[in-house]
Length: 256
Ligand code: DAK
Image 1 (cartoon, rainbow, N blue to C red):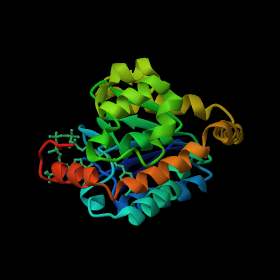
Image 2 (image 1 turned 90 degrees about the vertical axis):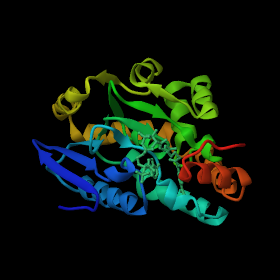
Image 3 (image 1 turned 30 degrees about the horizontal axis):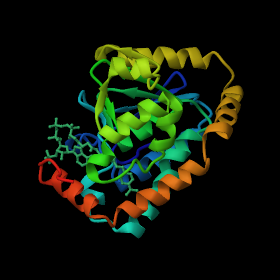
Image 4 (image 1 turned 60 degrees about the horizontal axis):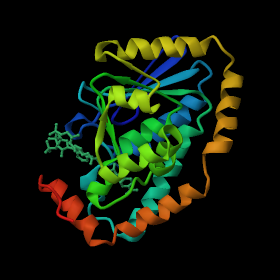
């Protein structure tokens, strides 16, 4: 099966899905989001697939965020609608998948990229990875569940600092925070992800689906997710959003 900008390999009941849009550090544009959605839907129905590993192509980036060039010209309504679409197609969809998704973070996981990793069920990072939610540097907030899932994973204080500073943390810090389960050398990343997958394979797939559903009943879809979406959309009509995105595209620092 083929999906645009994705490589899919299935071996021993483990699927490895690699996002490949390296010229933009694997940033998520509409086409990649749709392709990931289609792949998740398809993988959910494959009886010979029990675990999925999600990673980025190359050695530099897992996913460096949503594609800034694509959303820079959006207005408020487009921002809000696209946030809702993104949730439905990808972020909520992957969180609700019937099989465990392991994010193998092989480099930058920023903005929508970290949100994607957080929507997966487990995360392993290469020691070279850098993680952050830099949206406030663009005059935005995380719009794909990041304000909620980051707080759940690392606690309110650390999540606040990461979002308010727009800074990146290194992999050992991410492990200490509980944002990733494990840190390993970059050249061992896929092998370690495979051995985690192998430990999952020994257990019941039906029970895995039920674990995901039970955990999600407590952690997904609360009122904060809706608030995030509305607030995210409203920021698209601000001067800070125009300044933040123009500054990124012009390769300069924003002035807020
Ligand atoms: N979007 C588009 N292009 C990107 C990109 C991104 N997020 N990140 C990198 N690129 C492109 C760069 O523009 C550059 O392209 P060329 O100039 O070569 O054409 C190429 O990838 C290589 O990047 P750099 O030259 O910048 O590489 P460096 O090693 O110098 O720096 C970096 C690596 C990861 C630190 C840097 O690229 C960077 O800061 N990237 C942006 C990180 C970021 O701010 N990400 C976005 C966070 S905001 C939405 C819903 C949610 C969101 C948005 C909309 N809607 C529903 C509408 C979420 C937003 C975010 O994710």
